[in-house]
Amino acid sequence: MSDKSSSFGFESALSELEALVTRMESGELTLEDSLEAFEKGIGLTRQCQQALTAAEQRVQLLMERNGQSDAQPFQSGDASE
View 1: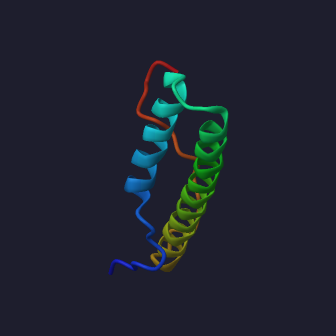
View 2: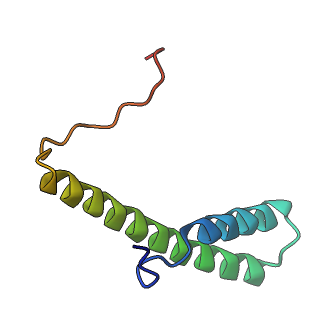
């Protein structure tokens, strides 16, 4: 049930973001190249956020269909909090 139109490659986008950050942090890019990398990173970040929002909405719909519409905030498994 994988919808390729809504899945733009979230994992590859994250990998690309990591590569951009590494290149920018290296200090070897020109100002113009850094600006281009930053602009591309912003675009990828927005796409990732949209994908995460869509996934969250799908989960909420599935829970409502199963009669579990009482949403609970996520709590990590960290017991030290």
